[in-house]
Length: 69
Image (tube, rainbow, N blue to C red; front, side, top):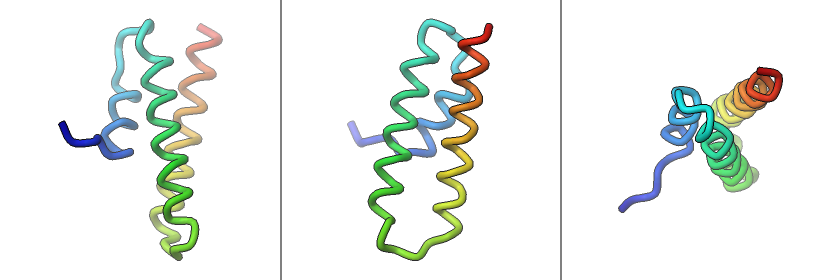
């Protein structure tokens, strides 16, 4: 089974409808995104870095909403 991309994991977290599974999906997506950020640290791909940071922000917002619900 191939590894899922950070984008696939991110989408899975965003569209998770089961509150019991949401926290785990957010965490898996966050770790994948952070790993990708480390991987491209030396590269100068500003566009991808911006996408990754935006995704982390969205996951953080989603996690906060879950906590307050």
